[in-house]
Image (cartoon, rainbow, N blue to C red; front, side, top):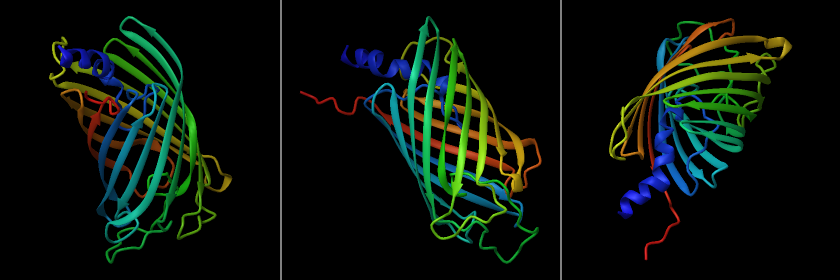
Length: 286
């Protein structure tokens, strides 16, 4: 009885909204209050300048401070800018949900987010011996590309088994700890996204031990706004997701460019992510 009650109060809300757990973006909804999430993301990508596969590892700790506020702290290690895997830096992400409208089998959420990153990579990579193309790149990000800050708004609509979400944000890129940003690389960019998630399984909820199967498609865009580096792109990222026992998550995603004129060193990325959540972390057993 106690186990069932715990599931209804703490796990059921997150489980019923599993189709909002996007792989490439964050929804306006938060993880449950008083919970912790442990996440490891692995990204694999072909680097156009060198013709070899790069890898980035992102360990991450997530904390649901309250029903309206959550925080992520992530580390970054990769061989994208170095011949071997090196520690790249860290980032902090915070999201505050300021609007919530609930209905039967549906809800609407809006949230604001901020992110900051400190990165120690060079802006031009330390090249390996076999270089297939000259290195040209106008794409910077806070996931290993550049130090900086970002902020924006997220709106998410849940309609029974379908969840739709949109993001609009601004990025300000700064100098890295070991290198200054070259003047021909962007200092300002706008990012935007449209994401859809569908809960395919289970058809009927009977137990928290049922495995969830979610399907996603996300459209991810960015536009550099500086006069010297003005350019843009739009990517598509389909994904499949499994959730086990309502607490453990496994994601598979593939991201590729649809169109754009931004010079980039990476056009295609495969993502593998593992996540485990711990709910009701401060409840003491008597």
